[in-house]
Image 1 (cartoon, one colour):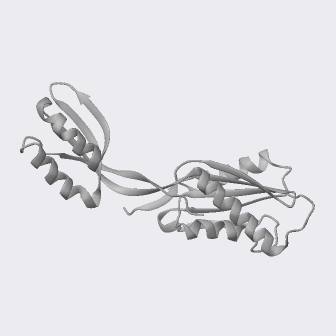
Image 2 (tube, rainbow, N blue to C red; image 1 turned 90 degrees about the vertical axis):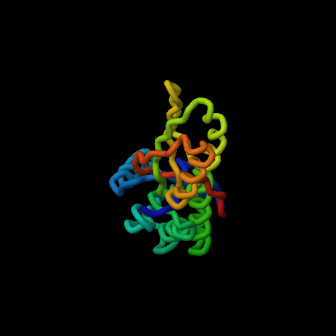
Image 3 (tube, one colour; image 1 turned 180 degrees about the vertical axis):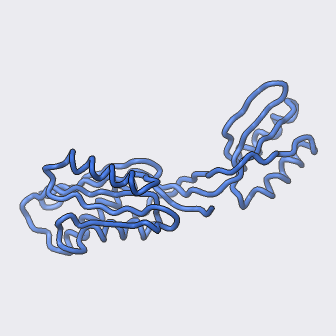
Length: 212
């Protein structure tokens, strides 16, 4: 398991350049089959578009990658979209840019800039996250220690569940690299009355700033 970057959600943005409409769409995808299904649906929905160009990266380090100019001059559409994904080190992501031709030729340079811009805008609209490998822990806390530990847990982990019964049961995710320090802090803060128990693995999502 290693950290990776991907889209936080779906995003759509549109721009017009010399009467041509460029509609950028961004999707998080985990499998190539899902990316191909989205492409098929978009082609069916936007059948009257001049071009539906795309790029996707899927898997660790974007090992599964593909792009298409969909009839635009070679290297002016799919590759610029792919370059946006590569420049931001994104994977598990599909970006599609639909073009409605406006009657004015843009030239190779103009097309490259337009498709790059539409792709970047769509990614920015979707937002980006870093997904980090994490360890899950179960904590059982006496009520008289929960108040003292709650702030620590929220600051150093991501709380998934909290149950109030005979004691307080908390299920939380901790970034793998910070687990040792987290365990030590909990034991110290609880005066040795709480020892987190391993409860599996998971992923933590951290928002990333837009980078146009």
